[in-house]
Length: 478
Ligand code: SF4
Ligand code: SF4
Ligand SMILES: [Zn+2]
Image 1: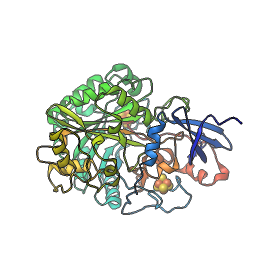
Image 2: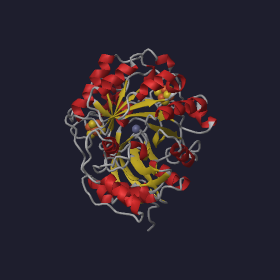
Image 3: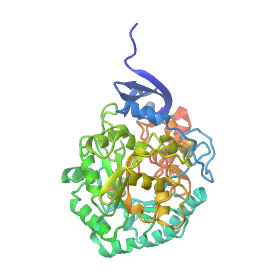
């Protein structure tokens, strides 16, 4: 009797990529790759690559910790996940990061934009009153939100932009981020100087996809090399905490991961790099989901291959949402970069409050680590921002001379689309977005079902007998 060519690992629920009907999905392992096998009564069999690293996939499945609940849920459980967002009481994680979109307009027209933002939508600015309401909704759910990201479209073109930042700063938000393509920062010296006034607990989340013109032209529609360079000059000048956000497309710029990490480490203002594989959404062309997908697992493999700094134990699943987030922390001290994550007992990472530290040989580093990861940070010190940055890690204290400037963070952030959608995983997502009506909705499901009136079509999915294909798309800064 012949064996199956794969190992049937587990069962979950996904979506049919054509009609978005909820369908059963087998998770199977074949040749060290992990696939979803789905079957829709109407659109038949679908095979989707979800990881090129079966061992790491299994590790993410073992990285389990109880979810943290928000103070409030906002919708009832009625139709079943993912049709009840949110947050409905069945959601398994509070908002570690919440996006507040203040406009659909943009000064670019990126071919990959998942909110299809462009100058044509420039008039669609949310009013300050509406934005204050949305910020209040985050505070209502979270009390003291960990990270709020002002996003768009391109938020810096909003006529009340600084009033929006002031409104956010008036609320008990631990860390405020600005998601931007950097054009305004590059072109307007006074604007950059004004941004610096929002430090500390403020960070620029800067679109930065490539060091080469060709990938920029393909992803963004124009060569932004000069814009990126000038924006970084200004951010360095004012030492405004910055994360470089790299959208990776398979075969286009995934060979630049190591170079971008090296480049980032040389920038005074840069605290880390976030890598995001591109989604099948918005203006993207078609591709074969069983073969062409760039997954979190593959990006992690490429970091390990392209950057001599990090070893496998240094790039680990983020415990609150291990399927879609992986992280590596390093300490930048006196020109020396030391990965931290691999030195921490995984049990400490997992169980948050734990105090067990695995020491390494380097005595100085050992002392630093002890100080860095022991408890008892005093509010208002530099330690506060470091502790907030590591909100998914144990509470930490930092000695006076180590600040947020010394931390370098690599994050891999993968989103779910109709192909790789996994109901088990989406229930744990901690990256959320505020709907203009005040609901807090997982970013992944927002882009599928709740953005720009898409919910009207969702009504039909909630009545399974009248299924029709939907148009699929997603939010700004793809
Ligand atoms: S994704 Fe979360 S909020 Fe949305 S329906 Fe599922 S459990 Fe509820
Ligand atoms: S991806 Fe960002 S910069 Fe590009 S069009 Fe969309 S909102 Fe604008
Ligand atoms: Zn279908």
